[in-house]
Amino acid sequence: MPGMLNLSALTLVVAAAALSAVEPAPVRLGQETQGPWWMGETALTATGGLRLDTKPWWSKATALEVGESFLTDDGRILVRRETFSDRGGRARDAVVCVLDDDEDGSLANGGDRDSDCYVADYNRDGAVDRMVDYIDDDGDNDPDEMDIRYFVDGELRYCWFGMDLDDDDSMWSLSGYEYGGPSFFESDAYGDSMVYMNKLNTDSGTWSPISECPFAFYDTDADGYSEVVVRCSAVPLSYDPGVDPDYANDYTHFAAPWGPAHARMGIVNVRYGFDVDGGSSAAAPLHYDFGFNLVGAALYDYPGMDHFNPKRRPPQVTVVTPWKDLRGICDAYAARETGFSWHEHADDTIAIGYGEHREQDFRWEGVFWTWERRFMENTGGPNQRWNVRREYSAIPAEKRELYYSSVDRRIHLKHAGEGWLQVGHFAGLGNIGEIRMFDTDANGYFDRWEYDFGDWRRVVSVTDERVEDLPWNVQDLSTRYTETILPEAVAANRRFMEAMAALRPFSPEPGLAEAANGTPSNVQRYAQDVLRELQYGDFYTWWSGVAAQVLAEFPVDDLRQLDAEKRAAQPTSQTAWDLRRTLSRIDTLYGQGKLEEAVRVMESSAPCFRMFTPEKDRQQEAPPGG
Image (tube, rainbow, N blue to C red; front, side, top):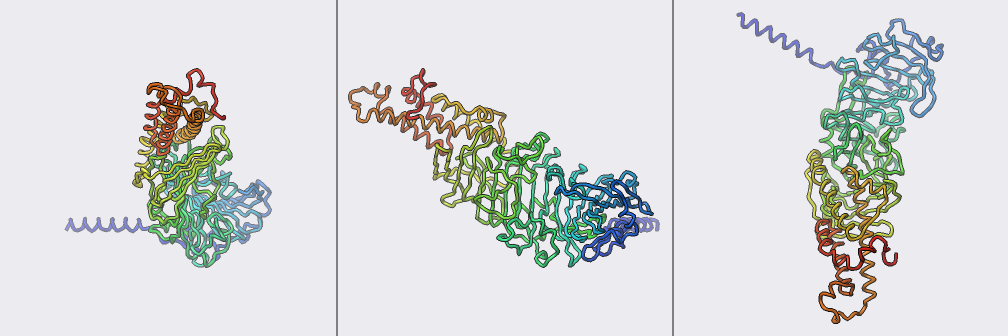
């Protein structure tokens, strides 16, 4: 029947299409000859060994002068001698082979980044030292993945892998034939991308996660710049942080031979950073506002972590958490302890940013922990000390929890028992001081703030923390912060400072005044907060001195001799005491963050303040005892 014949033909076509869509089985270590010619040319031994002095053209290669080259007889490999500096600045005199994997004629121009592989023998001793392999998965003539393989004594030990997820033709920057440049700033920390390290398991001939596995970047608004960054530290779960406090950043472990401890790897540290105020852009790349530092011990075992690329040289299966799933993994990571860092402003004592944005101290790693006061292993560096708020929780947590405090109008880490913020060294200022935060009743919220600004010290303890738990949704958090929290804090600061200035003029440092009055932003609000605290210190100290001086001058005045109107209208022990009471009321409201109420008290009490300082003398007089 015609219909039956058509159905059978259709079935055959569908079956053939299904078979063609099936990926080939991975080529494993030692099976390279089963793949295309270029796999055989770089075939590894069972221990990951690769030498060039076994090639028929080796003697010709050793006779090359610097800058000379030749093509192998089949025309598929370019062999050349070149000199360069590696990432450590060491001069290298190398034999380099360029394999034109896709045979597109690139060797005529010295090779390209479209499916070409570069094999470098740094010392021209026949043992391979580095291999850089570019992989074009989608056939658009630019790389989608990239391997930087590191050999020790001619044996492969570990590899940096790169994934160009936004197809911007950018992954690793190189010095010679290894990860290079001054830092990862020159690599692809912008947009959607992921890099990671694996170590060669010579027992099984497979890859195993180690070190930064992965470092992932997320461009959530599709502007080409990242708003979320994640770094996972993969180390043996049996490691001793007392012996190896920074195992995940110690290259001696990566370069060492495979050992039994490497058989059970885990994620022991997660750095998870965010741009909350929407500042990440071409004008301010790598702009991150806050980050978690999570310490735990999670077995490296996640669905989809075996990443197979049939165009990769064996081993073809790498191990890494899937990029699309990683943020969910971080959201649910079981942390034994948590550090929380919030970037408030730049730190003029260091320069750890990049290029024209160097002074901003923004890093590709996001905002991460410091090895001061509370040690947390494998967090890395360098770190900004000044103007980064640090909060620490020793309470185990399986989810990320934040809250908003109406006391200081800031977002905090829930269950943090302590925190500190070293203030100063921005806008031309020196060391201003420190703000310390504590949860004294262990209910999960800060209830004590200590301001230590040199001669000015203030302690606030509240019984009503006036907090709001914030649902863990970064987009909603960003909207709430930029549209409500930030503008409300800036407006409240401004009204309070204006009310103080009406009763006691204040002249701040020009740089601080400029920073505090700039375009509303996270850093502008911080400068405004610092200015407000300095102004308040001056305001409170001055008027406290005035009240104390009047009370000292009228220790036993006979208020019976004055009628009610005069008692209320001139300096007496009564009006000085009223001033003292008013200052205490303002101080209480200020400490509770009720700035609007404090303004109302100041405005309603203005006559009491003004009777002690004649208008003509306000600009000239110094505080009593000052």
